[in-house]
Figure 1: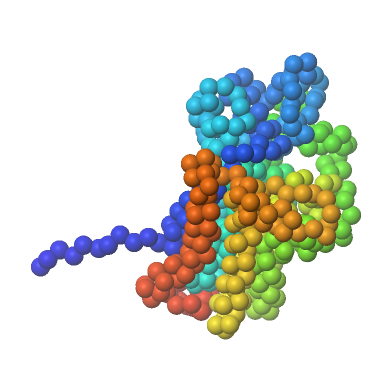
Figure 2: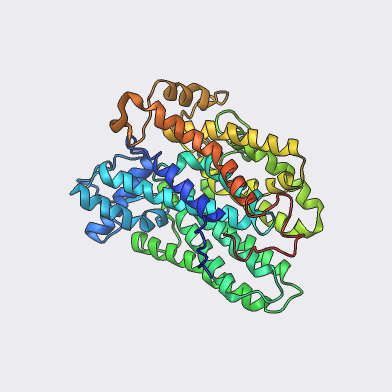
Length: 479
């Protein structure tokens, strides 16, 4: 008999990861070194060269960023250290190639490449979490929506902590749902969930809220099952490693574990002093205002609101819907009370990138159970989000902070794009021909859900077959 050679296939998960990483890599900024970027790179240089968290002495060091502060004669970064430390292998190679400290050059590009890689993983995790609820087609569409139709794209092109935080938060939720899906939840899932939370809070202090949120979900979901104490304790101990690491970092700088860098930076007696903005104003600003509204910059998320309503009505989804809602509010509400809620010069509410997946995922139910007209509407919202955030990814993730009635896409991003004022690394190679790769890049992201849908249709995957209903679910293998 002739030997049958099976064709290698690209799985939906691999397509999502590779396409996100390629698109982000083609959008990397080479023009702007922001305050965050500068402070992170200074911290990396201090660790690599001086084996210290001290950026420099007060008498000779010039911070060149508002995110550094002076304490006891030395300068330190006010930011949570996790992102800078995780990026050390990339930044270290960049500094080696540059031959000296610089906030530009290879160090800048490779630091952004690290963020691009991490957010490509986050896009895959949106797909993986979606598979607990929805078909491959719907889950893949949600992943592409996160990757390209939300502000995660512009911020994947800068050395910010927002996308890194999102990846850890998604990883924690992925593992904790795995723990509670069966009667014999595994410690091998509970512990990684805790490790993910630990990693998340080292990149963004606000992520400490995930400890009580996930503990509450575990206690509720496992209350009638065995191993409750073992699994909950495993998660808690693993997550507290993050608190320990931040405590040790604080101890090394201040001589006490109980003062964070943000707290000292703001001269606040307690961490709660960082949350002083009127929350009702912050909710308006971060949700629907033209300046920073999440639903304005990432319009696809409107479907998530309707998805929450549908999930909460159905008993089989209810507990997980509350988990997703708690994760969203756990980031959204504190940052709506943050002392500087606009987040500085940013395209949309950059602090809320890590909350986006938990508002986006419920949209899958609306898409999967809705009519063809609903799926067309979803794609239109996706396309609008791609154009808005694609142009921002190619021009700049920075935007004005003033005038709450101004939509920065119209006042800043679109004019910059039309005039060729873009910040991508490849501009020097194409010069005046920049519109060709720029338009092709955005067009590619518009086509990716259609390509994915076609590939999955060829394998018999049908839209509308929820894994909560079908016994043929292969959610244990998200690929």
